[in-house]
Amino acid sequence: MQQKIAVFPGSFDPITIGHVDLVRRALPLFDRIIVAVGINSTKRYLFPHEQRMQWLHEVFAEYPTVSVDSFENLTAHYCQRIGARYLLRGLRNASDFDYEKTISQLNHIVGEGIETIFLIAQPEYSHISSTIVRELIVGGADARQFLPEKVVIKM
Image 1 (cartoon, helix red, strand yellow):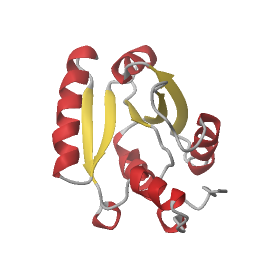
Image 2 (cartoon, helix red, strand yellow):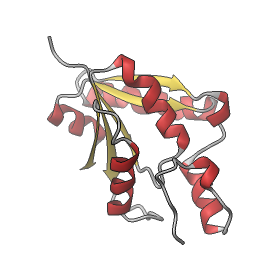
Image 3 (tube, rainbow, N blue to C red):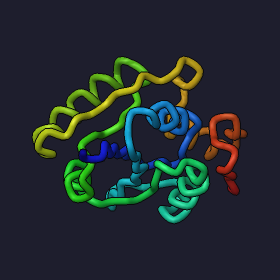
């Protein structure tokens, strides 16, 4: 029987407690979850790739079925290359759904049948996004309540 492998792609700039909650909730659904940092050379990040990868390794170290990786180019092609048949995505609101629905349909075509599994954010995390957390950090606010304990920001 083929392993059920899911990829949870993102920039994780930085990873938030919402991301961690999503992975924890998805653990019983898959044999393996790969948290994968997409590398986009045209995008500017607040935190360097190496730092984001280190945080992910530390945050998910206690989960034997979770691994961390990074990739360039299309997510669907990455999934095909590693044998993943599922994408894991979180939905916080209707705007997320509209955007993610379109992306999932394209991934299904390009990825030759890859399925996107959506988990709705728990209410206590639905207001948290990496974008908002970055804005707080850049603005000098204390963002620790939105970050996993192992993520220490030194600005």
